[in-house]
Length: 259
Image (tube, rainbow, N blue to C red; front, side):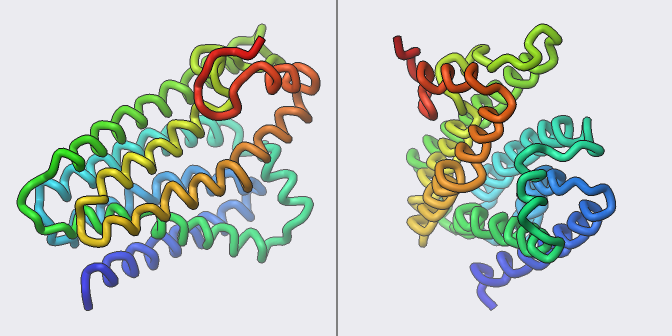
């Protein structure tokens, strides 16, 4: 069987099993928010599988696996701290889903997260299986942009957490650092990561398939679980203060305040 098929299938089987175990744990602790932690760390699992099994040019494979692992670990640690610090309290967006979904729907939701792990890893498979013995300039550009976007996403997450930790900021809208220029700088850098991955993948055979990543991530951010649900929860919790923030601050791309 071609590695283009076998490695994704092996990855899917492993992360699907992981998500079954996490779903059972979520049932026990009544907190479906833990799915976010393991969605992010599943990319580390897939990066390890790719590193062990893919037979592409080793330097390219090492580079893509290292970047995927770095991003996964960074995001996984952040979410572990954010969600793990209050396992007894489910986040607002998952509380809202709990009102509408039963256990079975959540099971399929967890499995869809596992499937999305594999689908979003398509560029990683493609890059790691590229046997060309030379890394191109375009690939290096994609890798550098990917690394910079990981830093940007990390900075925006840290600034938000730092703001929330200050007692005097309770109930206020975060306009600290990058959050003064974008209502969702973390989503901006997350989307930019997948654009960078696409650039990295383009010189590889079938690299154009990586376009599925920014398209699907963009759809989720703009239409499903990203900006819409986050802003609905923010309006519920912060009311008029957040509505004022919406009027003055760019929704996505960091930019200057509107007067």
